[in-house]
Amino acid sequence: MAIKTRSFHQVKSDLAIGAMTVVLYGMLAAVFFACLSIPNIYLRHLNRTFATTLLTFSVMIVAMHAVYGGFDVGRKKSKPVISALIAGTVITDLVAYLQMEIMNVNENYNDTLVLFGVDFLYLMLAMLLQMGIIVFFVRLGNDLYFRFHPPRSVLLVIGDPDQELPLRSKISRYQLQWKVEDCVLYNAPDLRERIRSAEVVFLGQIPQTDKAIVLKLCYDLRKDIMCKAQLQETLLCNSRPAIVDDAPFLEMEFFKMSFYQRAVKRMGDILISLFCLILLSPLMGIIAVAIRLEDHGPVFFRQKRLTIRGWEFTIWKFRTMKVDASLHDNQVSTAIDDPRITRVGKVLRRFRMDEIPQFLNVLKGEMSLVGPRPEMLANIDRYKETYPDFAYREKMKAGITGYAQIEGRYNTTPEDKLMLDLMYIESFSIWLDIKLLMRTVTVVAKRDSTQGFQTPPRRQAPAEIQTPNRRRRSNI
Image (tube, rainbow, N blue to C red; front, side, top):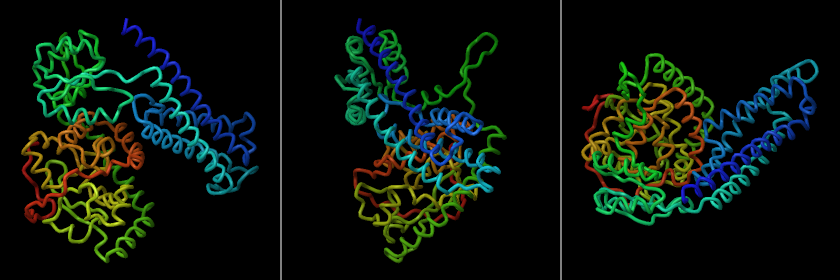
């Protein structure tokens, strides 16, 4: 009966959210055309310009829905959904606007292409109205969703007691979705009954053999499962089904990229990084002046990092810390309210502007636009002692953005960083790179994305001075 009731509520909420999605996208299109039709009489009637612009807008909004996730209320917090919808809508507006202005170049309207005339002002007005509509719909959508779906009872199944507090802490950030009612070790004698009383089962880190037993038990009892990603799950989830004779297999290729994918990825790295360096050069000049004016120190910060196959390279960033903090014996991870960060540095870190010089590393081929996060050498050596699998990140070039940079935080645990990076590596595709590049703009809306560690920085032993591109020992 409980399953039927939940299924009925799910159908009602799905219908309501689906209807709201259609209305939302319809209103976004209506606002765009209503504002732009004021200075453009061709958008007031059904004609070639109107039809082409409408088609462009429709195709782009569907594409942005695929990239950013669309009206994903109920599963995510309001802010990420709002920022994703706004990013997708702004891109859609700009593409449709550009197409419209190109069509306006004719003998009856404009002799030349005009991008920043009166039409642009009305485009800005449309964007502002659309942002207000998005905020209203997301807030309303989440309110309606959680009226149909109260917090679901959660059972934590863990491998040892130390896992309980971190799991509870993460789940507590989603109080509208889940409520932890119970916690149990995976080998408890009454495990079956406790699973039966829960709606959702969160599996922590437990031995693989026992995990398979618990998963089957949850499946038999028709329970939803959230399984903590470990190496085996990450590899299996990104495998491809293969049939050998009449036997089913799961195919997992070690080298994910073909020659053509490597060529396309490298070409994209060069073109996009070069474009961004040219486009952002005025901003880079302003940042450089601000850093110099604050403490008269160097503009750039350089540090050894690791990339593909364990190769070392020198990463470039805008300096965000005091000069003495940039010395090799002071290079440690930042903490919350770290006193080493300058006033200009706080602004740069908040909006990720300190990473703009990394486009130079991409141009040189030391990094890629998308890839595993480039960690400090001291951190990597320490992480590999605890997590030997950390070396698997070196299958691909370090990247400016990626799953770990978008979904994680600066203080995300090393193991979770590893799993996020492996999720990208094992599911690599050019389309995934495009999606992650476009989703990167939403990171600015995450205020905690650059949050430091809780404990104050710990001084490390001075690192050995290495020559650039010296190869370190790698397990790959």
